[in-house]
Image (cartoon, rainbow, N blue to C red; front, side, top):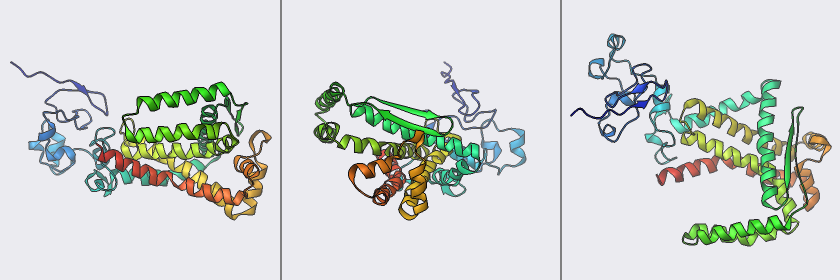
Length: 332
């Protein structure tokens, strides 16, 4: 009886592939390995040169140069792994596919660092960078505002203004969040780590949500939101992202590094330059006072001291993303 035919689609061009196809005949992208073929993949399928006579489906063009790899180094590195299957950092990094001699995860991390300044080159690119940063910033304010029981509305205006305004705290909303935490804690009681984390969160929540500490956390939430999104974006660049494509990983790394750069330069300027502090005091959106100044007045700590602490926080997304990728890969 003839063997069953496995029909899948090429990840690059969408062409149909059968079980016996080792690569796409249209674009030469390697076929996704199945359980039966994963153990028997030929060296040429991961970029090693191989005479064309030994390759399934070799074309006349291949025969002209038997030492030419089937596909480029870029294509090999971008498609050799399934999405989300990048090796851990740094222990298994040496076994990752390489691009220009650099392990793939590090290549995309460095590529994003090189591309991040692009969002500052021209007025339209600076506006795009500002809009992305503001979107993440106000999302941080809005998310924390609601979690602390304060209905919060973010606003971004196309002429360069952004803010998140919260209302009076709702006792019902805060009690509701505590009930949710208690329920999740009960459901996760068999997991020691989750039990400790959720227990601490349940104890800390009323100490924040029902006191003036609520406003401190709200004021910090915008810049912390940018740092959180930067961590996620850099992790996606290391891990392969949603699709595993080179374009997605490079974009994630670029935006992640831009968010890091944006906060590092802001905090460094506030720490070292009086002109930067004066500009920061004068450019609040919608005529409002900027977050760090409001925080300084609220807790009675100098702007420079707050900016110095947040400068350290702004640098954390990179090592945290690398650490999380290392943990993810070790757990498989």
